[in-house]
Structure formats: structure tokens, C-alpha cells
Image (tube, rainbow, N blue to C red):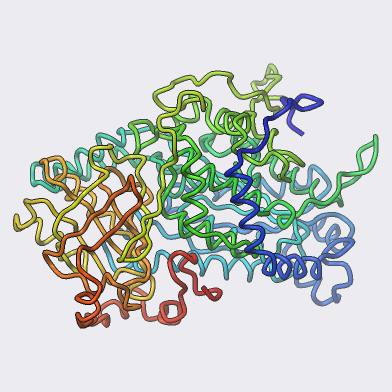
Length: 633
């Protein structure tokens, strides 16, 4: 347990009534699916080690390449054995630090009488590289490939706990979904940390807009991008990758305060070793300490409950987190039999204040957020306001109060090495209220994501970075079926007016739902020129989408004959973020009489590996159901 937690713990206020009612609603909705999930986990649970009773040939294969002491230990079948699932590659800056983790993990495991193996690797693609290219059409489905690969890695069933090494956009959701199929095991997610701050995200965005206007050349753009993305670690803006890290911490699957500690530091190394020790202790199989027996087993299925998922949603809303999690978190919850929808998110957003301003909804980056008080400050504020469930299991034990803390190294010796890792209480006051604020002085009284409803369907919009004067747009539609077509109109000077850009046939069934991040600079330029501008799409925007109001993930999608397929150039559309309304100003009979002629999608079905994903496109569920082909929507 964290050193900073008082005994007994401080009293907390009653749970906010909306948080309570939404949680209860989710539990009722999920009753049958949760029962099935829990029964599956119970059927897989063993009293001793997972490898007890395995055949001799099976065990020989499992330990064939191990060092002799480790081989003897796993053959004895008494001590805990950890499986590592890694998303390491050295193309993703966030994942490059994982190259050296396996040996550190094996060493840390041996130090506490356990063993560890890399169970398998999962793919990890970078949306920053594939933005605007054919490869981006594999991006969303890579989440489900990662889930499948995680299950393959753990299917050897010789592991008593698992460590998940992943950071970025689809990787953490995929690891989470796959690991939940082995939720009878303890699972600890192990972060790698953000890169140091480089060129500010605000300046990077300014250079991008200037390039889109033709004011700077490609060399200047590349120089700016290289100064922003310059070293090992997670990109420092608050997109999906860093939203993932926040989620794993507030859901109790990281060690407290570990999300945003930079790679290559003594504290980062100490936290990684501590994660190994916690995984061993959570098995309930560790060598008993002198004073008594080890703590009981705490599995991933114990940790991931309706309360945990609601805590994750609250974390997203309070920080202005990535819109991609209106897809991912739905799919992640479903893997545990928990059914959530955008209505749940909207209801929570209405009562959860925005406490953080990190780019794109501010100028700071995650390093500034961490320095200002970070996750420990945020979680304590939300707990003290009754906005989080405190009574949840975590990898630190029972109760979320352990996460109102931050780690520190203590006892430096003459050799410069630190003696121990400990946790202290998070700062009582924010170190910078332009970045992180208490509940009593929020940036906004409500969260960053809202649900839009209307005769075009249901969609979500992120408003935390949208100025109030831009949150209501009524303008004629400019309709395209490809993002490059809209870019072409802009480059020809044909968008110099008020407009709602309708970019359709970008849904999961059509082309895998790529992010449309390349549209951000041109739409921002038009808005900066004084035009009323908005985006409506059945596709995705980047997790770092910003100041232009964007109705995204529109369902039903165009290829499923959603109303967006009947919109015509010049139709008036109202996008009202304040009232939660998305309305096409065409009467129902006229709209119904319009024929739908789907554009040919063959260009999106071949090349860059897209041929292999036809099965995913045919069987994918709706966006509000998580846009996953792994289960019925």
C-alpha cells in the first residue's frame, strides 16, 4: 500500500448522484453479459500456479530457452511466473524504451523469487506516420488485431500474472481487450513515459496552419515537426496515447503516479521494477513474508468493474481526453461484459468539471501537467468532490485513495544510487493553475465531450478546445466522400465562406474509419478568417482534434444507408454543441425520397494490407458499440 495513505483513510463525501445513477444504469444494462464474463473467468481460475498439471512435453517447450535457474523454477511449478506482452518497436518513439524492459523485468522477478518471460509481441502502428495515407485505414482495426495477438500470447496458459507494455493509440485498448479474456490473472500495465518537451504544441499547430496557407515551405514544416517530435517517449500533446495513460492510472492498472514519468530516468526504472513486484504479490503465490502470508490474489477481472469504467469516463471528461475513447472505452468495457454508450458519457460529462488544459485544449503539454500536480492531484480532487468511486480494487490493493499520491526515490547513498521507492501525498495546491485546477475553480463546469442528436443520427463532439463563440454553427453543407477532395477544394480557394464540411463514407464499414487529422489545419484557417465552420463526418478526428466544432463518429454511417448519405451540397445544417443538436434542415419526406448512390469503395479495399481486413469491415459493429468486429454490436 502507498506510504501516503493515512490509516484509517480520510473520510470522503457521498458519491455524486449522477455518477451513482449512471453506474447503476450500466450495471442493470450489463447484468447478463457481466454474469457470463464472470462465469468464464471463474472457470479458468486455478488454485495454484497456472502450469500445475501440464504435460511434461508442454513444460519442456515452455522453458526450453530459459536460463537454468529460471528453468528449474518454472518446472517446480510452485513459484509465480509472469508473462510479458510487449508492443515494442523502435519506430514509435513512445515504444522504443521498451527495448530493454524484458531483461529488467526478468531481473526484478528473480529478486522476489519469481520468473518472467516475454509471452509475445503485438503490432504497434503510428497514426502520426499514416495520417492521410492508405495505411491509416488499418489503424482502428489494429486495435482488434492487438487484442487477438494478446490472446495468442497468453493462450500458452503457463503464466500466473501478466505485464502489458504499451502506450499509444490503439495499442493500450487492444492490450486491455485481449488481457480481459485472461482476466482470471493479475494484470499490470507498465508505461514508458513521455518524451521531454520540445517545440510547443501551439507553435507546431501554427506552423501547420501556415503551411496549409502556403506561407512556409515543406522544409520549414519538417523542421518544426522534428523539433516537436524529437526523442524517445510519448508525444507530449494530450491525444489518445496520453489519454490511454491517464485511463490506466485512474482505473487502477498502473502504479500510482507512473503515467508521465519520463523514460531513461532512475524513477522510471524503479517504477518498472515495482510493477513487477506488484504483479508477483497480486498472484497470491509469492513467498510469504516473515510476518505472515501473502495478500490474496487480485485479478484483472476483480479490478475492471462498472465502477472502474465509470471512473475512466470521469477521468476523460475532467481532462478533455481523446474523442477516440468514445469508441475505445466502449469496446474495452464490452470485453468485460460491461455495456456503456454515449448517453452515459454525456450524462457524466454534464456534471464533471474540466480540470486540465493540455494541448489541444490549452498550450501546456503533459510534462507541464505532471509538474503541476499531475494524476495524484487530479484524482484527489475528483475523489473529494464525490466524482469517483473510491471503493474499487487496483493493482495497489483496495481503494482508489492510493492514487492520490506521487512516487519518489528516497535514501540516496554515497554511490548516487537510491535506496527505495516510496509514495508521498500529491501536492495540496496546483503548481500552475493555467494547466491544472481544483474542482472549486475549474476551467469549465462540465467535461469535454458531448453527445449530438438529430435527424442525421448520433455523434460526439469534443468542446474543451472549442471557444464558446464557435460552438453553434448554421451553414450550408459542402459534401465530399473523401478527405482529399475537401483539401483540393481548399487549395483551389473554393471554401472561402461559411460552411459545414460533410465528409462521408469514412465509417468503419466503408474504409476502416481513418482519422481525418489532415483537415484540421485548413478548417482552422477558415475559422481564423472569420467564417462559420464545422465538420460532420462518420469518420474519426485525431485524439488531438481541436478548435473547430466537429461532429464525428456519426451513426448510422453512410455505407449503412445513414441519413448522411442523403445530404446534398447547399443543404443547411445546424451543429449546436450547447443544446446537443445536429440537424439537417430538410423535411423528412424530401430526405427519404432522395436516392442513395454509394460511391465505389474498391480503391479502399486493396493495397497497403487493406485486402486482409475485408473480414473486419464486413463484420464491424456500429461506432457507438465500439466499432469492433470482435462481437455483435
